[in-house]
Image (tube, rainbow, N blue to C red; front, side, top):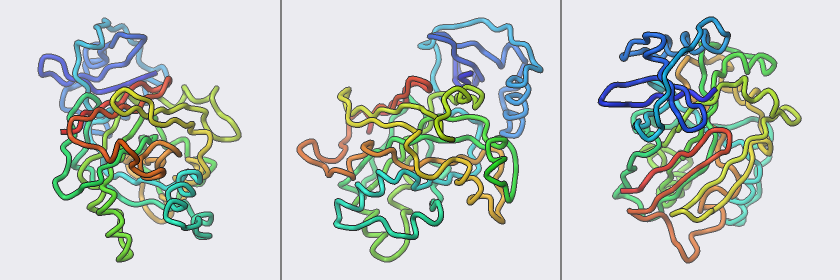
Length: 297
């Protein structure tokens, strides 16, 4: 099931998508407009388990304005989990993949205050000349847990969506030079959406413990790069186990996969088209999840 948060006539609505129509769960289930993240996942849990029957009226998709898929994000952990991306990005600078990368699935924390839904404009920060996009997957944590074993990790994941980890590459390299970061290079914007796909949809897509889900990035309508989640080195279970080691994961947390190989400028260099400029449209799409599209201001 594809579930999202949308706005219509100024009202916030939780809805599910089927084909090109949206069906309001808020109306059918009388869900309050001001919904806490815990309540959101409680409703979602009941829907997935079939404890709530849905008899909703469908409306055209274009009648709604998208919001990020969950009411709030409590933390944002962005992993570095695709070996291909690590090799490409470091190889461009004449570096090998460090041995330590194969020992633990590393991540950094990003800013939860500057999140942008599909269809919104993303401001280009004034402090960078090297703005980049990153096509990623994002996993939505639906309940609290600590010291979660890999074998039980999927019990805590309620959905998957797309993400664009916007990056100021010139600032990122400066931060790396002093042994910290990425920090300011990443905290100005992260796009999330359009919908979350519930995890039961992934059961038939598993390939050697990893879901087979396509992703494609387009720049101003032209395909830039593509890949698949099945090629990830560190599994979602391994990432969750490490993130929750002696630390709480909370309902509302998001785990991001890191860049899918070929889905950012940094791996190959800016070339003739250069870094991202104001006025450009970046679209990240998946046949399972939908399109996450933003225009850079």
